[in-house]
Image (cartoon, rainbow, N blue to C red; front, side, top):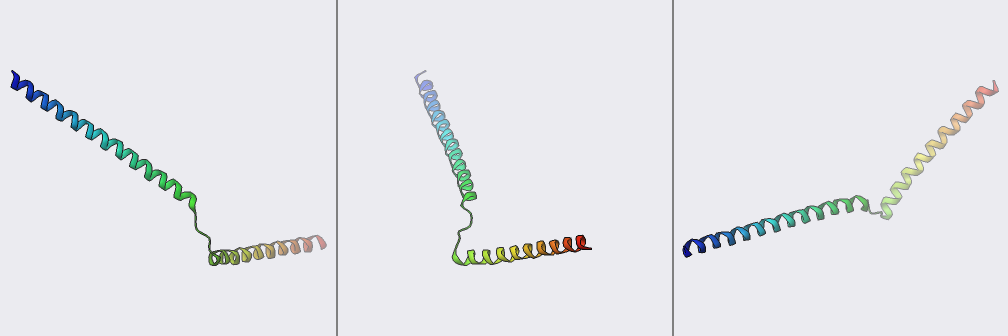
Amino acid sequence: MVMVFTIVSAVQEQLTVLIEETREKQIAEKERAKREEEERERKKFEGTRVTIESFLAWKKKFDAEMMEKKRLKNELIKQEKGKTGK
């Protein structure tokens, strides 16, 4: 009887240890996943670092786009004046 009690107690102790280890692993995995998700979210807001070269390239492209829009607007105004003048 004493021997059975000792064996059952040892098995219960091992099961408790296994359950605790499993629970700790699950908690650690959830925390790791949460940290990874937070890192991905943080990276979304970082954007591209601006350097002098990248700004100048962007400005050149932007100025060209604005000049084109201004040219198209002027052409449209000329066309409207031509239609109303006739």
